[in-house]
Amino acid sequence: MGAKYEILPRPPCRARRRRVLQTFSGLVLCLAAFSPGRAQEPNSAPGVGLGPIPLSLRQAVDFALAPDGDARVALAAELVEQTRQRRLQTRAALLPQLDSSISQQNIVRNLAAFGLRVQSPLPGFSIPSIVGPFNVFDARVTATQTIFDLAAIKRDQAARLQTEAARSGGADTRQQTTAAVARAYVSAQLAQQRYETAESDVALASELVKSAENRLKAGAGVRIEATRAQVQLADRKRQLLEARTQSRAAELQLARMLGLSFDRPIELTTPLEQPLPPEPEQSAPIEDTLEHRADWKTQMLRQEAADRSDSAVRWERLPSLTAFGDYGTIGSSVTNAQPTRTIGASLRIPVFDGGRREARRSETASLARQESIRTRDLRRQIEMEVRLTADSLATAAEQVEVAKAGLELAEEEQERAKRRYEAGVGTSLEATDAQTRLARARQNVVDALGLYNLARIDWSEARGRIESVIP
Image (cartoon, rainbow, N blue to C red; front, side, top):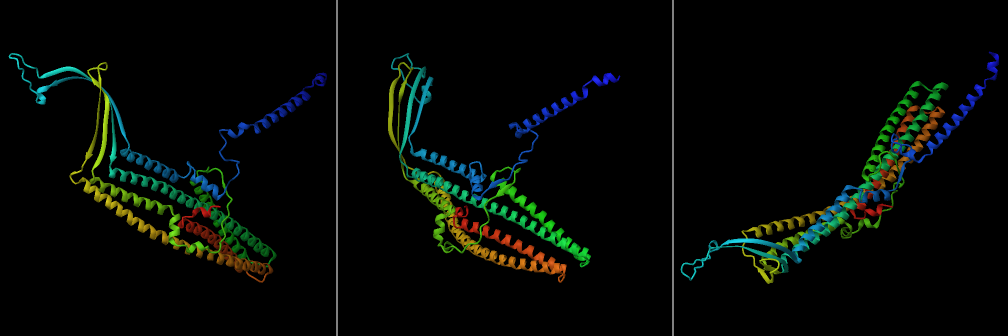
């Protein structure tokens, strides 16, 4: 028994095999970790482990204005294409019309049905009233060309203006989309700064809790001071959770607008603008604003198109001249067909159509008056928007300055209250009140800065210069 155990080397061999297996398993795990296909595992969640997406305001606007970006921009492009095709249909009335036809007929005719009764001069011999069957082959090209039709010319001009109005409307949609993206971007920045401010408030409340507990342990404080500080901390944590939810909601809204993935966070790289001195353009005349407003240009084109349509119906009373002609071969078959042609002109003179033209005239005149009313109302609306946004921008700039001054005073008050409380000459109530006012002052600065940036966007959009706020 003893000799058997002395000559068996199994333990060393098993240990060696175990070490080899461990080394091989480690190599396999390393290869699997650095394999390119690892990022494409079906069970891995998309976006997990990926960093945030850096996004500037300019990039956000470019994403929204891309062909596959905001839906309103894509719909505006389709509307331009639709009006362009309508214009081609309208212009076709002024262009040559060319048709071709080939026919082969086998005909039997009753001449009596057409009033043709031929008497035979020979007694006892009659000419039959039924003719046929006989074959007719006809291959022909027919062309028509409008020489003069003032109503068709006016309709073509109206269609051209409608196409230009659609293009201008597309530019207006791009401006509106740019403004909407800028507002969403600023709102996301504002929500993010509120969240950061709430984090600072939680940190400040935590320091007050520690100070109250230290004073209580040292016998210099009372339990109600520590409890009051903990209540303040709990309220700050609640506000932090609300701010985090609002920040995430604003981020998701921005991602939806830009078509970005919801799985990766967004890092906003363009900071909020600080108030600047009032620009001289705030007092610019309304005519300067109208030159840059795409919606005003669109409305002017729509009004002119409506006037042209009304004029087209009025000119339908005039005669119209059309040339026509055809050329082809006709015969009993293809082999014995002979060439024939027709050339002529037709003068159409409208006389009476049962009142349809007058009804259309009244309708187009009403549409033209409606567009004129919209033009006047839009001008007053633009002037009101410029005045209101200019006042809001000036007020928001003043609010930022007032909020910053209040923040400085609140920080000084909180620092003094903290030193007094730590020195034992102040109460926790003073410290918590100072902390509450500091949190409110921080929030006021964030809100005022966000309000200023939103007012700046509104003011630039009202003047038709939304691109000026996109760095």
